[in-house]
Image (cartoon, rainbow, N blue to C red; front, side, top):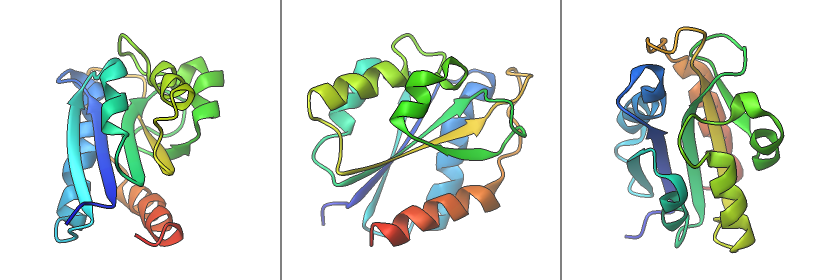
Length: 148
């Protein structure tokens, strides 16, 4: 069975940049029995992310951000949000905003894309506790709206 939704945790093995991966680990334990879901961890994928956005209807991207909200809190973002607010861009070589802009130009975006930023806080050397209640609410809303 082909998955309907791909969860992608973006990060690196350094400090709070692991938030995308840590979130994905926790999400996977919640939804592990759902065959409609696929889970991927990507290490600073840059433009290679585009190939992971293709051939699937729904994608949920999760990455660490610094926006000033409570450390560990998730926030749902649009492509426009991350393009217009430099504080929300990732620390990776080819930013998430640049990658998604390129994917849109190439018409390689999935039908439904949810971008979730997990607040890293001020101390990027440490991984804050992820607010799983808020994260679960964002995910459940997306799943319900998209009938996954």
